[in-house]
Amino acid sequence: MSLTLTVDGPRWREHLRRTAAAHPGLVPVVKGNGYGFGLGRLARRTQWLAEQDLGHEPGAGTCDTLAVGTYDEIGEVAQRFGGSIVVLTPWRPFGTALEATDDDHLAERLVHTVGRLEDLRDLLERRPRARFVLERMTSMQRHGFTARGLWSVGEVLRAHPGARLEGVAMHFPLAHGSHTSEASRLLTDVVGAELPEGDGARTVWVSHLSDAELAGLAARWPEYRFRSRMGTGLWLGERSALSVTSTVLDVHPLERGDVFGYRGRTAPKSGHLLVVTGGTAHGIGLEAPTGDLGLRGRAATLARGGLDAVGFVRSPFSIDAKQRLFAEPPHMQASMLFLPTGARVPAVGDLLDVRVRYTATTFDRVVVT
Image (cartoon, rainbow, N blue to C red; front, top):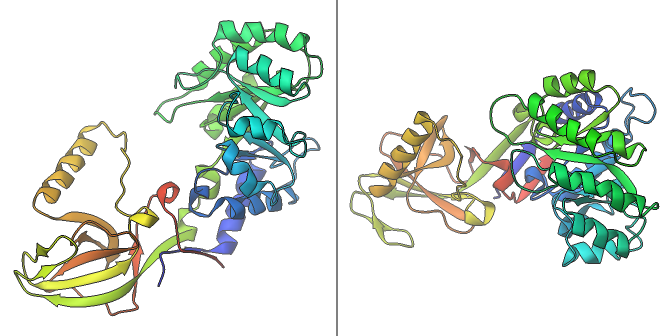
């Protein structure tokens, strides 16, 4: 009686191996809700990938490092993965970032992301041998050094010879179109910054570049090593290996006008009321903006708004391959669905397919075969 993610283990593991083998230096991203799997499970799976014979040349470093989103997530992965841990959120001189910086047990494993000159100075004063990547601002305009700021880094690093630069990081947007031109332009800025010589000055950590873009950059910049940070494409790239199910908890016949639910709604016509596992505590019914500004996306938004205005909203729960309507907004751990007369009525204990956004869903159970 749970909202369950079931994983076809052999197919999923083969996808993970195949993806890691195709990306020398791959850095698995393990953050947030662990893409639905949980942070701990993905940390263990990253350790498993690091121990696989993937056929790379020595020093490729595939899966020797994982990326977390925040400093607060380190505790969930540090005991389950033995390699380096890079934090994607930029280092700041406050909060849990300082706690992690002061932890001597983590110092050798932790790779900070730095995007401001004042933060770099502060970090190296606190931890002169800190490991870090320099975030270069991209068209996302989120975090990072400008070209001028990056040029100033060399002077700071020369004053701290013990500092360990692990590379320059670039986080590109998910927008359509190639990022090759932008990446090349930013790499020109890296060359112009005249960073201290070493492996770090010739390593670039990238997010959201396609395989074709990575291959093109590697051919154009052969003196640089590119490390792809990958989350969705790695963990969720084999969707056919993943299925989500809900359990039917109760079934009640309804006549038109019958009152039901927390909000005392009335049935618009006869049918059945289904109570199923999965509610707001799992992320069901909580919708984030899609960012789809096209005509189709706007039409879908209007359609959903029209349904909501008359009391109907399409749910992610499917019966006979058809998404059914919420009878009312989902509850914390369960939802009510309305089935009109004529539709097949499942029995208590039956499983329903559920369409979810994995990065925003918390499952009661994750079953890997």
